[in-house]
Image (cartoon, rainbow, N blue to C red):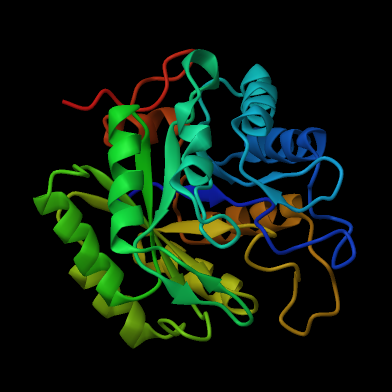
Length: 289
């Protein structure tokens, strides 16, 4: 029997704006409602980005994340929640790690950790070796599990380096992202090599940037992996770019593809057990030893 499908829902991201698509959730209430709706349909986890309430621009403050996490957990107290620690707009450790410091019912289960610097189309994401190690250390100290973001094979090798330094420990969860202009491309060769290079005891999801999202999601479902899916990576429903997608439509389509491949959806509770995480319902993250 195939492993159940991990659905990692990415509703917002840092790039989509209301001018680009009216469907992107930006405010706390919009993000909470989108996650609530798709969690009732069936997802495993949510990868969350905060936005400033006035400008709509990316934000890092733990107070905003606290409102998002509290709102989601009111309806879905076991859903696995990951906060973004992105370096695309914020360069200081105190900014990037702020949300990791939340405690109790507001504690995130996971924090994103991009394992090296990279270039996007018009912007760099700077992740120095020291920053990556410091973020991993802060997460471990606060019982937050890293969501390991990988855009090429070198980043997987760096994850193994962090393992040797005992800054991360298995079981691991990797997002493998394909189709960015300066990184691994969305083809079978890049995909196979990266999956093959993952450390032991790793769970993984495939993501595709832009038009590559549906292709990489479909491939992941077919070969037994998980999917990362949402407006963060692609605002369009179709590859011809004639219809702007809603997050609900994207998750609904993944369910159709999963059913066609005879794969059930991994529940948050099942994922928590596989990742040695706390059970939710007020107990979040992982107790590192």
